[in-house]
Picture 1 (cartoon, rainbow, N blue to C red):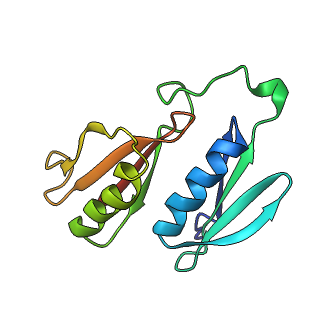
Picture 2 (cartoon, rainbow, N blue to C red; picture 1 turned 60 degrees about the horizontal axis):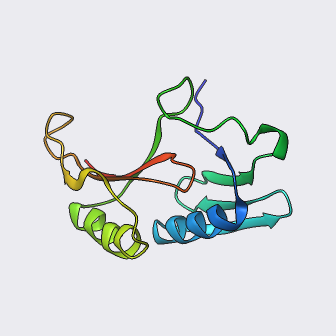
Length: 134
């Protein structure tokens, strides 16, 4: 049996902040609007058909803040076609939106693989995101 990742759902604390953040970011990475409902939004990658849903956390669960070092997801990485693409994304999204990159990125990480080059940053809820070329 073979499986492909079909969708991811990210719960966010404030849809008014996070929906525009993810719409802009994912459109720049080639994702297209898939749906927009009262309960959330979805953007789809036409190559893989992966859908990323962004859903506002129910009020009763918002007191539990996200931290990537606890059990659960640590970060999401988006693969691009070149180092130039990483730098272009950094310019058109990270810098444009005055987001502080993590780890003095973009830069090479030869300790991962010889051509690993990435920019790391956080979404409004501090979910770590990465745009990478390998």
